[in-house]
Image (cartoon, rainbow, N blue to C red):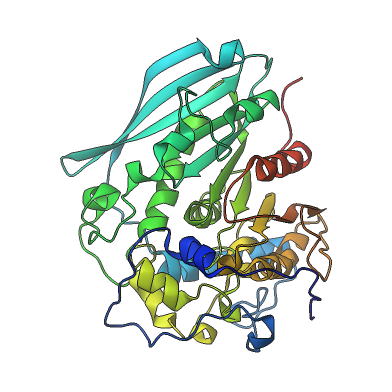
Length: 412
């Protein structure tokens, strides 16, 4: 089915460079292909055939949720593990929670703040993930919560609220009746190609191979350790916790939601290549580009598909399908051509059949929705916002509107 183009985007070379590299220096590795020109012309998107979402490896066609849950979903999860994100090692570790500060009068009395240290210890070494959590004081029952995977400077999640950022609009979320938590992804693993010697890799890795986990998988693992605490907090409804991320943090949120089904909802903001956009479109950032610029994000096997997207056994509609039947919200930005907004919408569009196996029928329109007009159907939603690559209050309000309907508020 062909989708009509309802939105035309304006391209800025400097913007795309910023979106793609985020200030980091590109580097090459010996096993990568010759770079091809970056495509921003929809007419030049090559023809492609997506791998069949509901066809099992033995040829069996999935027609119900039991077949999906027991056969096809595990197959796809294993393919993404071995070929894209990498496998978490089985090294034993211990985990402790320590509340280092409590402020029952945060936000001028509107919220209670808890600052926690989540300490992971293995092989005589340890690291600490610092988790900040605000809960609304007016709540009479446990409330739903959002956990942000912060991929930007710590000031964007300033727990003192001296610095306030739309990236993490804690006051607005509290006013809507939700708890809101965040952690810095660098606490789990540094966002640099350090040979997997630092962060959680330095604790849990004993040996590495082509399937060993990359940094995105490590951040997703860290999000699950934060969730380990959140489900124990009496002020939070343990079955109503959403994970949210932007850009590389959004790739992480998708993988966290795929691997940890305790997350009740996933909000993915402009994940792009390796996250929410179809790789086979070769529009904007490609697998080659992302592996060249960020060789630490994925497992080594992912490099086999540099310039060879059609040989990949999965594409990102399948990653989204791994969230089913839980609520999933995908969002793009109009000027973020590097992330291929159309490719993100298509990925969600082709993930819908997995959702429909569970009885909550979804039917997205053939064409992308107009700018700033979310489309919601069943447990899936999408919007393309005006402006650049960013996570803004406008995005948050759309996510919260969806959560009001699908995640469920558990307070008066």
